[in-house]
Each structure stands twice: as structure tokens, then as C-alpha cells.
Image (cartoon, rainbow, N blue to C red; front, side, top):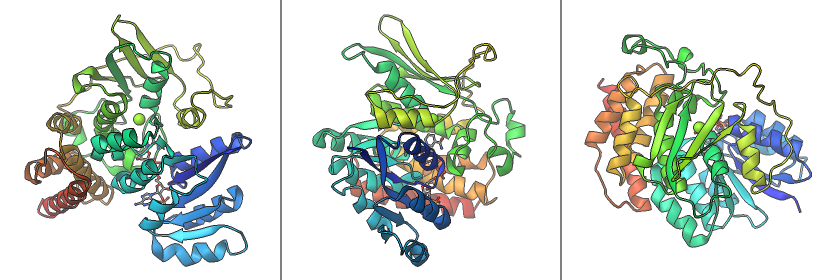
Length: 385
Ligand code: NDP
Ligand code: MG
């Protein structure tokens, strides 16, 4: 029986690499459902190649084009947010890869957890926004959540065989992004073109900007807290520009385990698919004859204020990470449309944190309201900037 995988966001960076993994192991995995938001031509090509049972296009105005293009095939075609939420619960689905961007991933992920489909989690925003709720839902339903994010996959691999052994620290590595060595003055004038040029990873636009601003690392600290049950003071970030060590765990005897590899997301994607087994992979290997210089630096939260704001949100807890996530999504979109400067993003996020209503113990409905309120505040602040 091949594992049936639903890929939410199959046309993106993670989605397309997941399909490469499925192609390489066609004897083990099958794409049961493929979904996109706008890129309908890519979705059509993927559907014709992988022959899933179901395809979904988020944007309803693209539905007819998709439906007509696949009319000769026995593929069910749906559209809209509701369809995305429903297809994850289809009986044959074994695993849901959450590879869509942002807050939009929350509801489909919750539905997949309720339907007891193993989650391969790329959409870190789900845990940033509602980590406590997601963990509780996963616990009640006995649904495993396997990390796809490279750092968390590394930690997860380091923890294999360590059941019952106390973790002293989780050490997340960060590349530092394209602006690692920039001064504040230089950061004030950077453009989106510069920010979109990540030194080590080829990713979707939103996470690439988050990496440049180091908000991505802040989100990953939150993600680590919820995935591994560690306290914030047990999570350390170290800048490691070569991105060869994907992350580390320090145990109570002082031993540190690290997972190393080339910066290639297909490895963590494949590990989530095959866990607890490992499968052969054709990806490039590290060559220690050329990879001779692994370096480490401390992150600088005065130049990268988003990282400091993420830490603050983590410490304040409640709906504060949800507020930060919503403000950040609005800011990144504005930066990508030249409506906000790179450093302006931190100003708007900070202002939104001050103005949005704080809720200590949010329910799902509270998160929905918080997301809407924080987006409105951030949009208004940008307009008045
Ligand atoms: P991309 O922008 O490359 O792809 C996003 C995918 O999700 C696309 O298929 C897109 O459709 C779809 N999508 C976007 N918004 C919506 C929406 N509102 N409703 C339905 N579908 C939507 O992103 P990435 O692949 O880079 O990232 C995906 C997730 O994985 C993010 O949460 C990111 O943080 C995380 N991640 C990514 C890594 C990477 O290397 N790329 C590494 C670690 C984590 P369309 O193509 O039609 O726009
Ligand atoms: Mg990562």
C-alpha cells in the first residue's frame, strides 16, 4: 500500500520539492491531493503528471480554467478555502503536508489533525499562531506532527533514540540571511530584490523576506517550543552562515548532537515521509574536502529587531505571537509591494503589538478575531506611516 499524501501548496517551493521526493519513491508514495492558490497552469501540469484523486485551487476565479483543463481525466476538481479544509479529511489520506504560506494554513491543519492524518508540518505559522491549541488537538486525537522545517527536522533526528533523556538546550542554527553583515544604515535602504536573494536556500517569497529580517528564526524558536516541549530559555539561536549544521541538541550530560547535510529541503521532506525509516536519496552529499570552514556568530537583535520582537511575543504568550504573525504577514506583503521599508517592518509590528487586544488564554475564535484586528491595525499604521 502506497502512502497517500495530500500536499497543501503543491505549486510552491516545498510543494514542488515534495513532488520530487514522491517521484523518486513512486513505489512508496502517491500524491492523493494537490492544491494551489493562484498558479493554475503549474497545478494543471502537476495534476496531469501525478494523477491525484483531487485538486483544489484556492482562488475561485481560476476554477473553470482548472476544471476544463482536466476534463479528460478522472480527477475531482474543487475550489475555495472550505474545500481545502475538507479534502485533508478524505478517508484514503494517510499524511498531510502543510506547505501553504501563513495563517491560511491554520484551519486545514486543525481539520487534518482532527481527522487523525499524520501531519508533515512545513507551515510553521500554524504553530506560531496557535501552538498550544494545535498541541492539545494533536494530543486528544493522537495525531503525530512531524517537522519539515530543516532546523526542526535536525532536532527531531538528534532526538531519535533519546526517549527519556533530558534536553538541556535546543540550538537552532541561522544562516543570518543576505544582510548578516549589514550595518543599520545599510539596512535602512535595502530593496526587495536584495532581500529576495537568499545566500543558501531557494524558498518562497514570504519566508525569504522573513529570513532576511530574521523573523523566520523568531518563528522557529516558537515552533521549537511547541514541537519539543522546551522552555524558551532552553532554545538558543546561533548564526552559522554555511547552513551545513541544520541544528543541534545539548543533553544534560553536556553532549551535543548535530545533524549535518547540504542545504536541500528534499531531505527533511523525505524524512517526514519515511519516518522512522531512512530511504536512499540521490541528493548531493557534503564533501569535507571543500567544506572546511564552519563558523558561528551570535545573532544581533539590535540590527535584527524582528528577532527581539518574536522573543518578546514568546515570553508574553497568549495571543501575542498571533498578533506578531498577522502584523508580519501584512508588513512582508507591503515590503514586497514597495509600500514599506525593510526597517519599517519592525516599527509596524511593534506598534501592532502595543495596540492589539491581548488575550491570555485564547480560543480558536479569539485567534480568528486577533488575526483580523492585528491585520487592520498594521494596515492602518502602514497607511499613516
Ligand atoms: P511558496 O510561496 O513557494 O508556496 C506556497 C504554496 O501555498 C503555493 O502552492 C501557493 O499557491 C499556496 N498558497 C499560498 N497561499 C495560499 C492560500 N491562502 N490558500 C491556499 N494556498 C495557498 O512557499 P514555500 O513553499 O516557501 O513555504 C511554504 C511553507 O513552508 C511556509 O509556511 C514556510 O514558512 C514553510 N517553510 C518553507 C521552507 C522552504 O524552503 N521554502 C523551509 C521551511 C519552512 P500558488 O502557487 O498558487 O500561489
Ligand atoms: Mg527553517
